[in-house]
Amino acid sequence: MSNALEYRLIKPDDTLRDFVYCFSSLKNLAGFSGGVIVPNGKIDLLLCKTTSKQFQIMLMGLETKPKPMPERGIDAFFAISFNPLAIEYIFQQPIAGFIDSGKELPDDFWGFRSEDLDDFEAFCEKASQKIRSLLPEEIDARKRKLFELIFATDGGMNIRELAEQVGWSERQINRYFNQQLGLSLKTYCTILRFQASLHHIKDGKLAPQLNFTDQSHFIREIKKLSGVSPKELFRNQNDRFLQFLVYHTR
Image 1: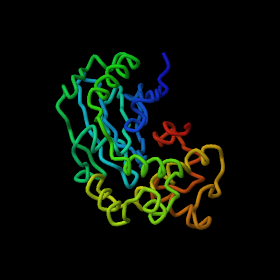
Image 2: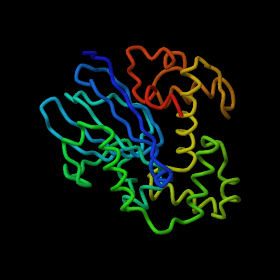
Image 3: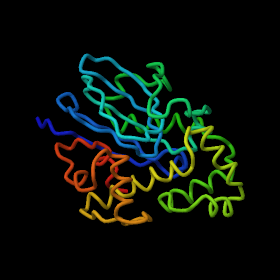
Image 4: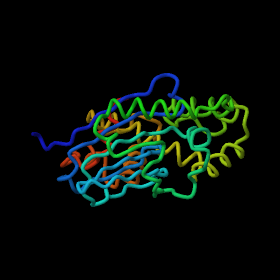
């Protein structure tokens, strides 16, 4: 049996795409060490099973800097990566209080059990059904439009343009981000641009492909959010940048 990391990703159906980015599974973690988690602009619900058969559910806030993967005996974990709209409309509570950290949830949250980590497809269907049951009847059209524009441009549209197209003031947009997510729109867009750059870096494109000011700005931002230069990130020795593996395809 292979001991290589085993990664799988399933995208949600159209009914959930405003709220869910993807479902993912990572196995064969027990012998893996030295992993680095980098910001991805998503809110992750993590379900873990340890080598000692303990079950844990965590809701992670947004990451704004790289951090080492916890040194625990994790056998496998499944994750639901949520888009920011889910915070207000699915979880109905801000996550501003745990930037760069997480919150442990009851181990029966949403009816999940340890056995759900035995079958990824069944887990995705169970999670999808639960999230559909929580979908709101209405979504503020300004907020939906705001995130559509932000994601379509990989965070490349400035706040003035966003405010004009969405019909929300710059102050209202920043207040919404700070209250719900715990950071400014500018910081969030920087994370999205970094995450979008991983696709290019993985292909060996080590010059800026997005709207960085210049090469120095590109290197500085990549190093700030990954801890290493674009060249070292491209090498990704020992597969230690987990989200670099996870998000390299759209």
